[in-house]
Length: 86
Image (cartoon, rainbow, N blue to C red; front, top):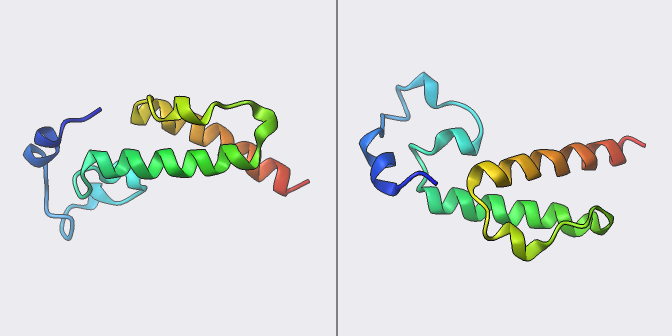
């Protein structure tokens, strides 16, 4: 996980920096890493609850890094969209 000090060292002006546009995970310069991680855990847990047949342990999500959570989140979002389109 990116340390808060690293985020502060690389902080740019969000109003003028075009590279800062995008998803929440791409905006670590604007949001402390802990908040990003918490939001990702909660959203991934919500997705996992709606799909119990996938077998993801909700408690294990709390121990994962942002990168691991993003991978699982993307997988669950893909399944969710696929099931909604059926």
